[in-house]
Length: 342
Image (cartoon, rainbow, N blue to C red; front, side, top):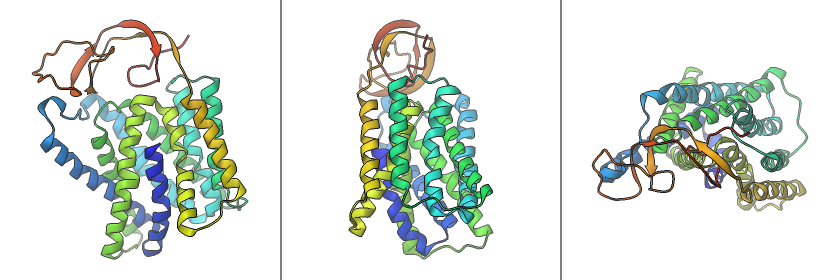
């Protein structure tokens, strides 16, 4: 929810900055601000981290998944969106962008086999419906069919990105988000310069970097952590509440009175979130043997010996082995509960 709040809050500030910069250039600066800011944070954290709690950086086996996520989410997705926005009116684009949450959930459920039930499905529908109502400022205007299809393609790319990122979400969230920001930033800035756009004034560049660091960078770190602990579809559903935060902040900044669609959208999102947050998923399930690395404490899933020096602090990070086990307790489809359901 905090990831959604930060991303949603960045929208009205980005709208203020777009008057001072080309849209593609602004997108690049926002991404670069997130990537550079998080890279600096990584350095600070590495300097002060204890020997027991060094970050679980990406490993060789993670590279194919992560490369795919960066390619779809940081290169193809933004390029398709920029192409689509050329001829698609803002009202239509706002509605089409809600498809990211839909694609994220559908891919998670039917391609990557993440568990869901009727309650989660209805909650997802309610949240997406609320997001659509919030973005429906006016009846969608007709635009070019290819442009609309490009925006749909961008949403599909980000849905793929979210599902592939889940595959590596046990790794360091700062590293994942920093690399994504740097790649997307360099790509978009290069694309903007190649099409004749100019760099904005230094003040606007700094402002864009700051907004990008918080609204794109820190938000993405929290999003990756949510993928780790909640699974893809639920994280995508909660993140769909971002338009509400942006709309609410815009109302405050512009001192406007909320319209009926805003109130209806808020009610639909509240219902969907209630359905999700009151979920209780519990059954007898088995854990396959697995070896991975991430920050953890010695809970019921982490009862292992230490083959590396350990000072006794928790949480700590190291590669560890999970033996096969079977038990029953409430759980989400997190990195330890990606099992089949009979």
